[in-house]
Length: 303
Image (cartoon, rainbow, N blue to C red; front, side):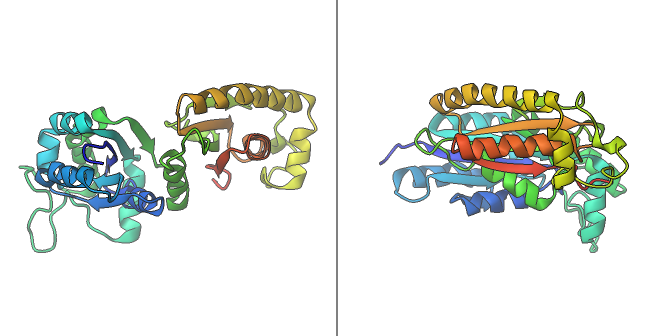
């Protein structure tokens, strides 16, 4: 119907942080996605789509090349929110990780000059001298979009597949009738706490299989490790209490119309205890609550 509100997800972030992966994930769940749409065409496109019966979920990729958006980002986002349901997601990663990704793919960073000597960064007076400087310069230029973000995702520890899973879980379009999308992430505190968690549970007080020689090199998905962790009465009690809390919390989130929930389960290294507990929680959500659940073992294979 004319005048309907569209769901618009603006995907931005640092070059090399996963914007293309995120946009493709949105496409896979039915979004109409456009990358680097000139800012002057955004509102005309929205008017056309609102007036028609075409796409109702729109994904727009914005990066350092869209200098007009960066210069007036707050106003543009504010204007979009007047007629649409707008969500801004900002992807970032540690500088060293971004540099490594560019070196692995052998692609030039957009802030650097290309082989013909012309700047790929339109509108920046001082061209960065190397890729580390390029990443830091881009962080400063994109700070306005980061400040406007509804959700910031640190992709430092995530593989493209894990990022895709997370985006689908968050923006999968759940409704009260369909339920809620839940991501359960196991991780190691020594690698940092994921930035995008809604709920966090710590398992570092549980007996650690790392100190059992025959279990040290195994993973939480191995039966021997699971039997050890679940053989501890404190583990069984802790998992039971987490399940009870989620049994209470999740229906209330669904009632409020929340479409996604991200749960973190942490231990020291993310290889043993957190993985076992995360598996138990994810299985409970699927089997007992019928919740659409994605499980990500972020650090299970970390060195």
